[in-house]
Image (cartoon, rainbow, N blue to C red; front, side):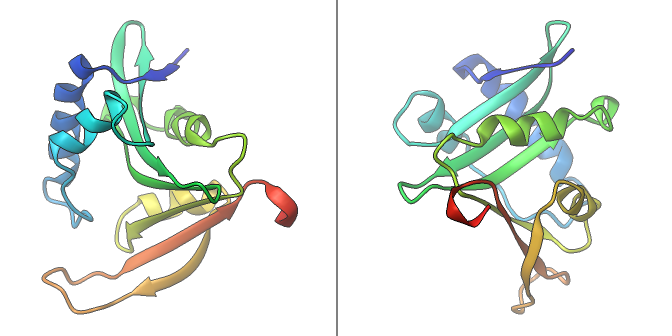
Length: 151
């Protein structure tokens, strides 16, 4: 059973390491600096950095930001290879949804297997940004209504 808990400063090395592994060879969205995680963990920002723990070992993380209008934006989520397909990603996403949230949003490169993950969680494509960049793939914008009057 995986436990989802708030990350500590001691977990940031693991998070940055998993982030580097996930970015290798992939057309990932971008790099989040260590300082952003530290600011969230130390409470200088209003987001969440959570980790999944199984048998005392870290197996994944999620970084999400929140605004006062009830929107949570998933900035990054990663589950290590040997722990995939065990619903850990789903648990991480569910754990960042606040009780006052009405919408979850995120962006994902259109060529990544994660696109199907987000669709399976009920996220809907809002559009694809194909603005010319160094990368060849567009960025899919996803949203999911999770509460409020629109649910």
